Length: 476
Image (cartoon, rainbow, N blue to C red; front, side, top):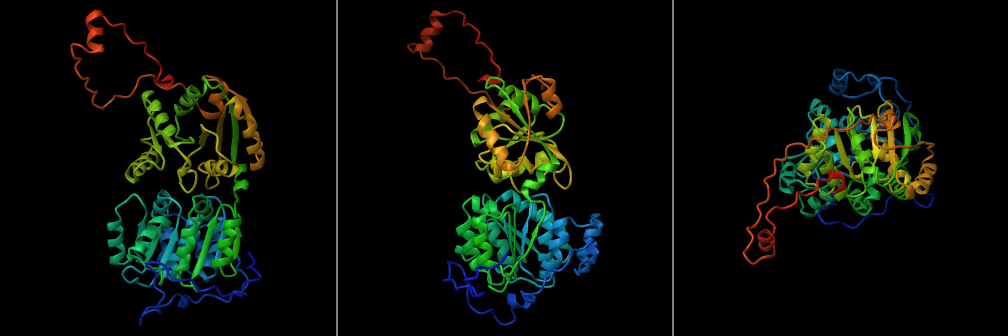
């Protein structure tokens, strides 16, 4: 992407931020400029056909071979030669396209052989959510170990003191969410003056979540001559601001943009009545294989999990109101197939990778076409196919038709009811077990009625109480 013609090519010096350190590098400390970045006018390097074609440390190539990875994904084949050469990289591709190794291998290769000083990481990866931070860490950990680099993950929801201690011991590559990293910098537990390679992963989601001011301040604290890589599913106006301000003549790679991923999916709008919606949801949740179900609000996710559990379905909720340990348990259970239904808000719409997931259900339609594409991106990953289903009430039909048009999708449209063959054909739906799972919660003790109370009078005048009418959990 071309730079702003009004810029001179040199970035304006920024004022020191709390916790930042703009002093010259101490004696013996290698500044970021020693990463030997190429001339910005150099043409992009051609894509490679095999990881063995790359000039990477031998331990990294060995680690790739051990995991059966010899042929790179398109985004890796295009971006890695330029990233390894020190070029700034702008990559566009949806999650699941192989972006993590596209920037991760280059980051590790260019940092290998160095050792970070306490509180001064050498590489930085910024991500929007805790789950994505852990996923990036898990993906890079075996390769970092192969070249002797220390990874540290800093996210909210976990003890900040433990993360500060890890930085104090020294970490070579830091994977962080913007909010927690800002907290650590303000406490003078971390300084970014030695960062030679900075990566922004899922940059568009960071801007959507309101992190743009924090991301900007963090990038200002990294060396101006360091390498920067930005990966995003979309490149809107806010992303363009970051690119023009912080990337130097980036090599642009656009692989598998969001609208292009729809060809690997089936899209269905299932028209349901208000009275049938919940039971239709339960039947879809009762399918044999796993499914992610998206709802609009946190309390709706918790309520649906309770109703599914009461019908014998192993479900868990994932949303921002859960503690980090609860979110980890939900994801671990879903990965391990102990949980078959993950009910999530948009927190899981991007960056969460689930192997072999073939169905995504929008119980509540998304707010816009971008959210639809990101939710659907949890399936049809790594070249596989998948199905995205949206339950549509009568008053939502026009809105969903407009959303599909903006997304460039022509979905199948079917009117369904619980038990319909069409519902089973599209989603694998089947009636679940009606027996509720054992309730381990202790029953609430009722306070004894006092002699003059209304309850006491009712008991005194009514020798036998009428049994309460039992209702389906979905009607409560």
